Image (spheres, one colour):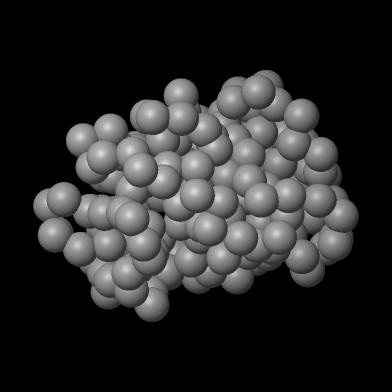
Length: 197
């Protein structure tokens, strides 16, 4: 293991908690918020590009190795939207507004055409100018419900139906979500790359 501490390029407390739980005690994860309140502009056109931008910024402001997660929801009927704009889908008004907009846009669309996947791209840089970032991706397939269900999780979790568990992502206990989710799948690949059991 090349380091014991890294900075997560996110101010999202839910994401920090999830990633720390997935990494366990092997690495202490700190929030970029400890070092800067400034969010870098996400000018990339893909989840991977944005993850690398965020990781490099977090490494620059913290002086630590940095891990960035760019993730979102890609809905088949919408050609992959909201995609990289998932967090800002309703013009930055938050999760409830994003969910309401998605339900409105999909109004009248039958279940068979509501397929979707959560996407996660992780980028780990050892330092700001790291020429070889470690990139890991994870996909979690499901479909969009016609209304929210469940109280767990955050973001689009209440609208995301998990077929293998016959419930929404927001109805899953956190331990189950941390084994099934797009972020869990990407993190499993990253842990394997880093040699973390």
